[in-house]
Image (cartoon, rainbow, N blue to C red; front, side, top):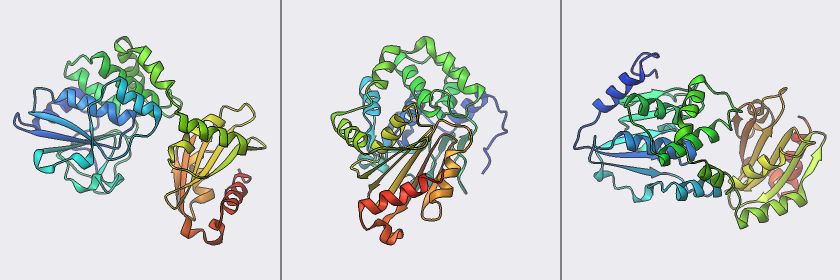
Length: 330
């Protein structure tokens, strides 16, 4: 569905229309799938609504497990709650940022007044106010445009959150971005607490994740220019992402592929430092016939239900061979 205003509508006009959806007696629930971009965007929207409505509360649908994301929430004191604490009768308006209702069943339970996102619009997505800019590298960029149009100078805490949201969602501008993302990043820099950014970025590991890295170092192999490791059953799929990012730093590797089992699914994470093959297309080519697969040019993910793999999933060794056989086709 198209946005309810022309593509080149000014940020000032957008802000005017956004505020027109609210009244001073409203209470707003902002729902997110919590990551740095979503958290910072929700925080910015809450600041936009200050003194415009009675209250604005942020609710996440997921558990925050990554050490760096936990550090972000703690160091920037981001006030939010898990959705299980949401009492629908307490709110008159509903918003979702950096996501859309079809992205998760928990998000799909509500009729939204406001949707602000940078992912491609889903089928039938609608809201009273909707701004979807899929060409943008981060939803935070949109919210910065709103803040500036509303003549709201971000506090150091909010600026630092938005700055980090753009950094992570664009992978420090390694992913496709727009001039708007770059302008937003440069605008924020004078207000940012860079010491907190450094602390968040250096908080990538916990004692538990370090144990997983030790196991990964024992298991990994280099197949030509591909670093590969099968981690077996993991307690948190995010550890597969961290390990894949880590092994891409190996000088001999232009690909990093890490697989593991979580929740009766085989999960395969792809990272690429090359130019010849797109990671998303490759994930689809290698695993699409068994499950879901896709992603970006340099980062992708595949998920396959174990029950759909038959004897291939009979034990960990069989799964490792299954993934490794496909890795060798890269």
